[in-house]
Image 1 (cartoon, one colour):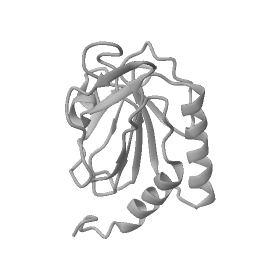
Image 2: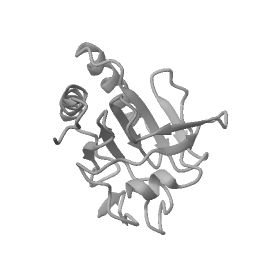
Image 3: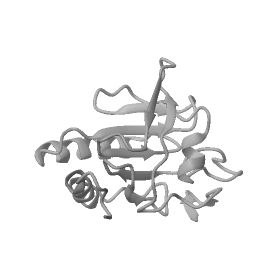
Amino acid sequence: MKINYNTSTLHLEDMPLDIGYASEKVALKNYSDETFTIGGQNGFTQLVISAPFIDDTLLAQMKEIDSLLSLNALGGITKALVTANTKTDIPNSEEWLVGIDTDEMFGDYYGIRLAPGELGGELTKALFVISKDGAVFYNEIPNSLDEPFNIDKIVVKIAAANNCYTGKGCHG
């Protein structure tokens, strides 16, 4: 998959984890060096965003997601922001888990690590909605690192993922 960044074309090392596949439970570290897990079946709908860098546009989108989830009474969603390393300046958030992919499991399992070259080893800008049964319900990987996520579609997909769980999975 090709990802545009400024005047460069970047590539992913692997194919991204697709819709319908089981997500992997991975361990991340926060800035206090505490470990937490995301992905896998945990009984909660999960929203996971990765990025090679955190900019004002991404932070604004995260705030917009929070507002829309609140307006639509979609509570109980686990939200996480993931980067590949500690060089990325991530603001503290009470609404979002903020994690560093120190052992590279997230980038590898979800197939979103950028190939060697400019930004090599970083995680591309990506978003995954994981249903309560641990399946990837929706993913969005913009073709450009400057391209915003489709917030309206994300909220619809989160609502659907949150409401579809019957104990038998979303696809059964």
